[in-house]
Length: 124
Image (tube, rainbow, N blue to C red):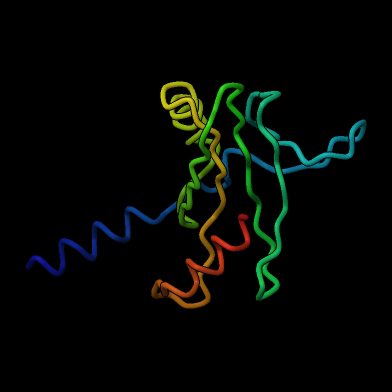
């Protein structure tokens, strides 16, 4: 019975909202990537990174003016950045850190440590 419960919980846990609550577009004036559908924050930079395997990954850098450290935040494909904006704002403010956030891309359904290593290298 426990296995059925965990399977049902896993199915509910990994459903991001459809459609996503945010989008990534290019600003016509500056040519920089920006979020659509999320309040503008001058201390947030949006980047498109390429993994060694050629995947394109959207990453954000949440800058704190007095930060001495940067938190690397990896999250799975089921997370929705639009729903996590408040979390990043609170983490940045209370911990006084910069936050580099990217979607954790894996090459297989099951997670591999090697995939994590490649993603961390990509973020730096």
